[in-house]
Length: 100
Ligand code: SF4
Image: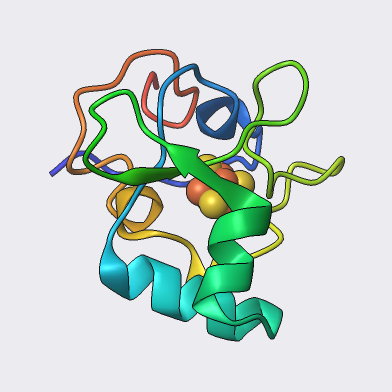
């Protein structure tokens, strides 16, 4: 497995596409933010293009709604499975931590 040391550049959190959410993600994120799951869904998600899952909302410009100005993730300890699996479960290019 390729060695990966995140450089906290925030690039992966600005890529176009969806952060698809599992039921477990919804539960963990709502709890982390002190919200009910319904409140979390209303405030932070929308229906994904596959019309089968929810996805996190984007900020204007396309960054994930939880990416902060210093490139840190506001919900890092409760981040979705898709984010936890990055980059090892992904075929990615454009991540500077993998291009060395
Ligand atoms: S939840 Fe956090 S790690 Fe995942 S895309 Fe958003 S800012 Fe990045």
